[in-house]
Length: 468
Image 1: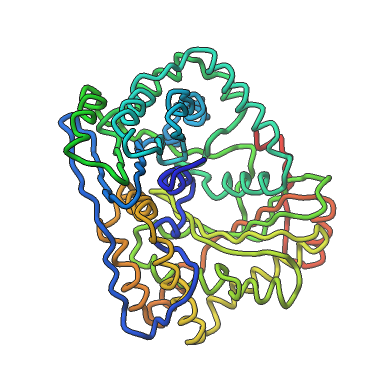
Image 2: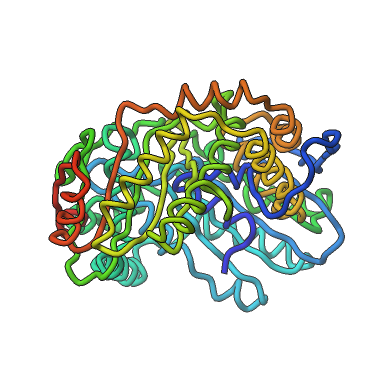
């Protein structure tokens, strides 16, 4: 079970705009006056040892959520030993003392960050702080749990081919992140992972888990004055500088580089349908056009009546579900489209999606279509920030990614103020990529026959063994 903070911080493998307030549920009228939204801001302090403490206080419920966010992730795994971050998360994620309190614990690693935390009753906050510090600062990384979790991760990855969705997601990620610091992902190969020793894990933890590389987020019924003695006792003696960001660019040599018009096929003959991913590299999350791009994505493939759903699903019947989104790391943005279709209709689906992308950037967008997308985004924002935990999650993600502290309050006004000219300018600038990545997983023989019927496509085939 994950806390609200774990959900936002622990799943930032590719940071969704939804976690930054670009979430969506229902619609309001964007033509009306801009709603005044002022979300509660946290109090932020720095302990003498350099640990940042972020307080989101509220007495409404007798609950407290503690999350320690480390600014290190799998991109910081040592060279030749990928999987270190994933293994550390598994070994740390245990605590019978926590469960005895009726609380729960979580660890959530990704490429940029590592989050671990506790959620429980407010009266137990002093004890929970102590236990969180024990998890983070003084873990047992060399006992039997190391061997158990090491074997568990290898077993999990050995089943990566059980679903086409896992295969296509991994292959698409490997291609789109090639020659970037994110090219390794969470784990490159079993061969690398088997090299990790308990001593390696201890050294990695020591180098990355330092107060100057961390933020402690405290949400809920938490009295700063009453908790301060326990906070200092638990974390005050923790020392260490922030580690240097030394990640180098990486490309998986088993995955061929993408080429224009080429489809990468992960062969899985037993699958009756093909999983499809289409996309391209996009601006980083802090680009000034991010709000215009959010509107473009919404009308193109985010909500049920978007263009992709209306054409590919409803009109042509090529899929049961299709959608698009932007995802972000610090140094990389990716726009992607996801769908599934029968093996024999893979070619037509890819062709029609590429046609839809071309039409999006060449044909005018109707005023009503723009307004609907803006209403969709603005209407969902209040629901996406309805709880203090949701606000804390989104604010903290933006904070550790370097966004303006007031970015949540800026979202609705900025979306509301967007003009057609700004949206079309962003579209022409960012939706005309030099290279579109097309990756599929399914029966290669049937897929290649389907592609041949469309013309203009070449293909490369890899096996699931090439992914792990």
